[in-house]
Length: 189
Image (cartoon, rainbow, N blue to C red; front, top):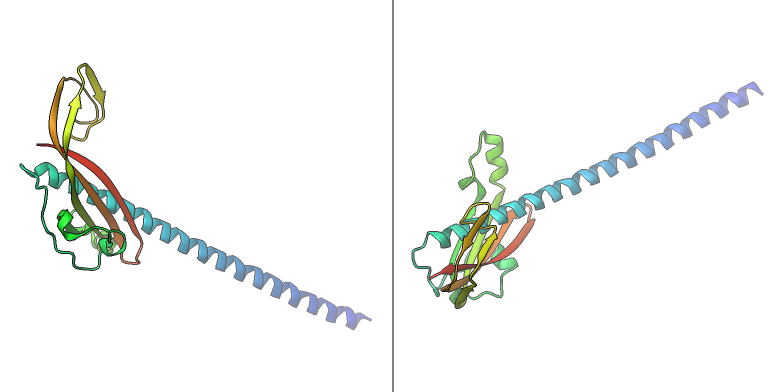
């Protein structure tokens, strides 16, 4: 009878060992899956930040022009976000297109940061949307403005001719994660 109990203990310990091994394997797989999802989320978030950077570069381009154009023909070539998201645009409606790498516009401290930035590219496309008149009622205005700093107060009573431009931008990670955003910008003539 004592030999029977010894055999039962061995079988029980083997079953417990197998059960714990399966549970450990499942926990490792769950952890690996969560790590992969976090990496994808981080890549997408950085792609979004890259798209925002491209949008700001497009705004800077328009601000720095003394007389922004209303028409131009831009070459569409290369594997960029315009192939994926902006295929409704035609070259004759585009006034400017630029694609570049993030490492060319952001300072980096070491080679590790450089290698990370080389994984991200951006593109912005500027489209002329039309002209119009912007009326400003008399009275005091206040709010937020890129051009005027973080906040401003002013009193105006005027109207101005403005051109409207739509800036499409996207950030692209080497893995294929792409974030696209757009903004409508008005520039006084």
